[in-house]
Image (cartoon, rainbow, N blue to C red; front, side, top):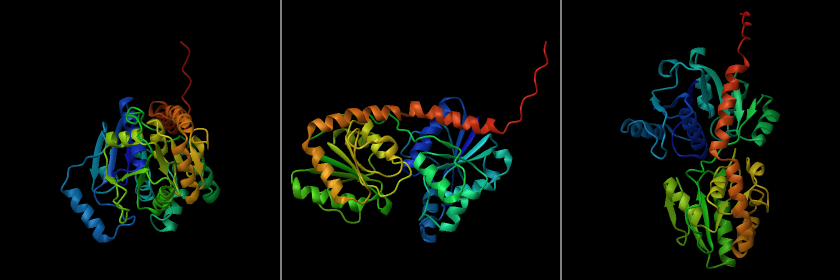
Length: 359
């Protein structure tokens, strides 16, 4: 298959990682894959001056994904139009601004597929975001929760559900956990629940003063207690070692489409305390392979952290079952399902073949 994957940007996010992992797998499986992203940045939360600064940065650098070993072709284009995209069998897109651009492509660029991580409320005008579900696309969601909520709310059809995947060749146990250490990933998007996590950690420290807290992320916190060290933009190898050497991983998100970090943590053998957001309920069961609380439950997060830190038997059980869960969601198992879903898009509307004349 000739496949074009149109991305809004190639910065590090969980969703972009999932899609680039799939792009690499498709490439390695023999498909002709091109990843495309625009030189002129989409607006999202940017001001015009933000866009101009981002454009200036792009013009000073060659097209590349700094944080990921991309093996297929990468193309940075002035804008997403017929002129700049290759002819193909399929053109895949995610994020609502790219959906509108791909809508305007002609049929020679391929059948159009919308990859839906979640409803992107808050990333642009709500009427524009919501109107994407009325556009003529084949839609693949990455969780049943997202499929059900979008179909119920917008009346469109999500044709297939393929889960996100974790690359277990990249995330695996790499070192022994240290005593009473909690790791949390930070992002300033309110949906990520960082304030809830920081509040839960402060409460935890009143109970267990000797707990060590680690925090990392791609965005620096504006305010963080001096007692919490922050690792800015750790490499994948560094993140793997942080997961592996931590006693517990805290995931306080308030809203997700899937929620990849808990799976990464499980793949590294680190027990997880998480909120029930996105697809977490589809791969994490409370007290089976994780400890799960409702979004916004700060006291519940602190309680579960304390329980895990003080209960080595529970940690051991959750660690082992988490590793088993990560294996089920490993890229090597899930990516072939994604490839079959794409093949189905090509075959579903093909005219029947004429019967072969008997010899």
